[in-house]
Length: 351
Ligand code: GLN
Image (spheres, rainbow, N blue to C red):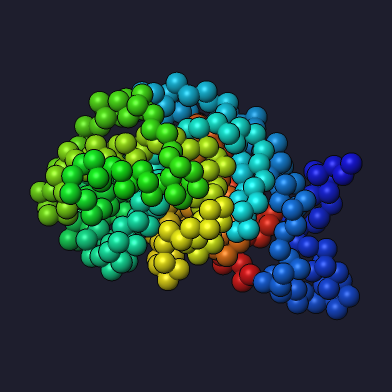
């Protein structure tokens, strides 16, 4: 049987297809066109790189679980899963990819997709704003500093504002739409809500409550503040597996159509706007670093999940609870970065 890591190790600059390398050798100049389908990674290469990313970082112990939401501190820190989901719905996994964890902020782009779908990208730009704050995800100073109280949809303030924009007559309808949309992205009937996570987070959500009230004070929240806070906190308390998070991401890489269910969830022409927000703010105040290294639109969550989008091709999801100072999972960041480098997936790579 082929040993995946030997195979991978034998490719000098990563996983460029043999055909492309041969073309370089024969002509003597590097004319390989990466958009050429000959460089589309094969199933064997995708499985190999997922296995390698998992093996390479599984012993890393840096960082610690989030603890400002008490229940997140109790999740086993050793859990680690890596998955690739391609636009044709194929799934490649390594590690704990069936463990269901709190989706937290990795949910934010998917709710944003629903708001865009209902009201268009301009409404998001006007009513929330799309400039990255460059500040931590729970910043209250950002609300005071930034022009027009503009906040980004991927930090807490903007995500609570997104929830308040969902067209609904009451809290039940708002929650049912948010959950229904999130489940449709994951390609499942209904994502489970962790009551324990909700309780733990809601009972300690003084900072988010302050944010919701500040937004309301500045006319930048479009529903009752407590209602928006409750629904936002429930949204963050939905449970997903790494595989499901990969399917959610692949719906965006696939132009808004879920590759597993075939259901369209976002107009194709809105996908670039959504991905641009993910690239510039998906890692909060580390988004510049992330763009510089992995070069992919992505979103992190304090539950330890990260999803990255390779437009037109695939999504990469990873999960591991230990976080760095910015609230981003260390092992998941490294695993996705590694895969991006190996497969030369950066959107700036001229593919
Ligand atoms: N629910 C979390 C919060 O509001 C989400 C933050 C995150 O995942 N970065 O604080």
